[in-house]
Image (cartoon, rainbow, N blue to C red):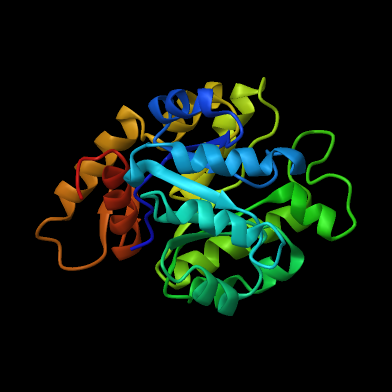
Length: 272
């Protein structure tokens, strides 16, 4: 089952800003306490102290640690060990063996944001302690020597689209959740909602946010409309007693379309 229980709106919060921890947790479905990119090198030790002293709900808290091969990783783990948090986001994940060993005591969201990480997505998805995959656009483009993941019109470049699809397919193939990348233009709520709606329709279980103001748009995008819910209910009702392919409102219906209708109601919280 390709779901991730904390979504749909996951909110990053810098671990060097403890004043924001509780507010972030209140506003989003889950908070990602970030020890990596959001924290300057000189502030990382203080961020770890903040993490160790925090007391958020472990079931709705994820900790993004520095890459497994980095000099900061061991210190991150030491700070994490004194907390009750057991969901970890592994930044710049590339090696399934490293994840399986170094983070064996945790449920891991493997953040695939380098070329090597993306092409190894199927291998990483098979690691037993990996609960979900997420992809990151800007780090990926930087790893390729690129300058931006998006065109001047705001759409993803082809390589970013390919990476997004690769990560989603790998997650789905091995029964893991898939989390869509952040949307960097904070002011463009309409663009965010459109991208999140596409992500939900494609099979992503959640989307990461970088600002509290993005949470409502992501939640709205992942929630099926009343029309979508009504159609799904009517379709599934019409399917009862049907022996195979049948016609519904001028469309031929078969098994995959019924499963999509079930997924619509699952996202709406109507069926489990």
